[in-house]
Image (cartoon, rainbow, N blue to C red; front, top):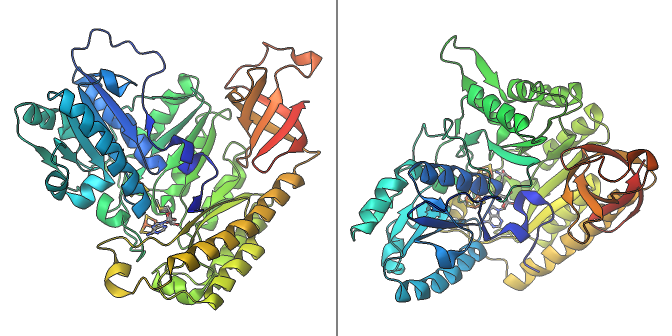
Length: 478
Ligand code: SAM
Ligand code: SF4
Ligand code: F3S
């Protein structure tokens, strides 16, 4: 097994998802684009910004690449596997281009940024290469490409946040939405390509974030997830009075929009999450009690080589603090096995840390060397692939016991569930989430006082949990 992805943050089932509005109203548009997205939630949120930029310019959107005049792939470079997937997809689109020479194919996002114009040499049939900070120039680049030139813009910016652009919600359930609050990353984790593909960290205007979340609420959305590679270092200086808005301040502002709007956020770096953030979470019932706190490794020696700037003990003390201030808070993590020089002893330290933390969710990967990163330049990728995979399987197996335990702990309890829509398997059942981010399925009919039809998606229901699987709680309305 290469990796295990469980919830919607990096939902594997969403990789390669084609974006389309639920109710396309673009019959009159002359030219249509199709966009497919890979990678993290931030990339999916970017696709919604891109769709907004293009629609404003008069382009229509389609969910069928066969109908498109332009095909865009919003790409990810985080691991080699992500790039291989995109290359395969490009091969398929190349075939289409042979039969339809007017078709434009564009590579957007992190892989475009990493490979820059090299992409055009390697993939001759790609017409556009556009990095994450250059989406505003897409319309003019399309014009260039249409006139037979190649459209390339991979300039990174220190200011761009797309704060003034209202993303078009595509493939949305109408209940939950991602909202980017910052871009880039100033950390230099040695394994990671993101600082190179996304550039310097910058925070978005707090006013525009609150406006976007308010608008979402007014449109019927009931949950926003504030996104950034390192949300706890969010800091915006209000130019009108030079006041500083920290992440805790921002969380509070968004939570105050309405008690009916749930607020989530991702990702927290263990070195930056503060007591102030935890106390703000405690103060507001609608800030979900769930923290994604990537550990990467349980060995201080490896953490130092990874340049994570914390030790095993520091990480444990953060987890203890979370549990002290927010008892019962959901906790998830990311881990990498088989990083350069990782010994069996280091690996055992990761296992024992997992044992200590008993995460509710975990995204577990084996190390994939990325060109240009600090680790690639400094260290040898010397753990054999088989060993990486075996160690990953051990972490996955251990985590499974914890996640199952975590699900079983919820049996016999009642949770407030935000209904996101019909369950995948049956439209006689609702599907929703608890505050601590667990998926719940329950019959629409269950409590005579709440006959079917009284509840809708976007409503909250109190659900008594009767059974569970490894990933889902199953219950009935109480
Ligand atoms: N900014 C977040 C953080 O600090 O954890 C997330 C960064 S990245 C988008 C998501 C996860 O991918 C990381 O937490 C890490 O576990 C994993 N990852 C990043 N680079 C990797 C690599 N070279 N090989 C394997 N996994 C990697
Ligand atoms: Fe990558 Fe580290 Fe930044 Fe996360 S915090 S995006 S892992 S450099
Ligand atoms: Fe996200 Fe992949 Fe880029 S994880 S930031 S799309 S490298």
